[in-house]
Length: 193
Picture 1 (tube, helix red, strand yellow):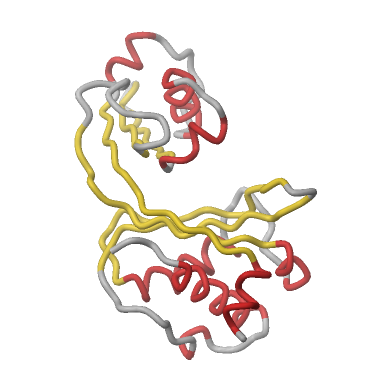
Picture 2: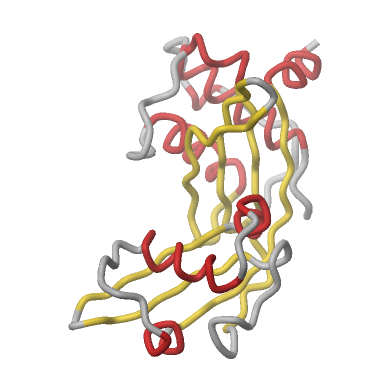
């Protein structure tokens, strides 16, 4: 099942209900349910540029309705990197839904394709566990090389020591793909008519 604009519309419906103080559980979807790992991303459009406002999801298989309802709010209100989204920002928002598929262990830290695969890294250093992920579009959007992407992931994991060739070679890497769709608030309003 590919991600659809109806998934994004549902995320907007949930966020609008939350911001208006209505019950998000009353919001009903216009699509069939299935189970997927998923991420919900909110971007704010300023001067034609997308700026990240929140992105949180799960690698656990969740019913799409339950997952989108939950992560629409978590990514909008509880992404620790950002202040909660406010009602006055709605008209500048864009929602992205990513349904994750095709998980497989990579042979090494470079065994993945920019723009095709998202990657998750895992490693242990001095008894401390580290992990982080980037969705498939991140490296391409940032115009990073594979090595730069890996180094950014290592930093994202919270690791603050020197990054060495040996560390990169020791990483456990899982690659995956996603079906991604976006919807701006103005497109959302047109769908509501």
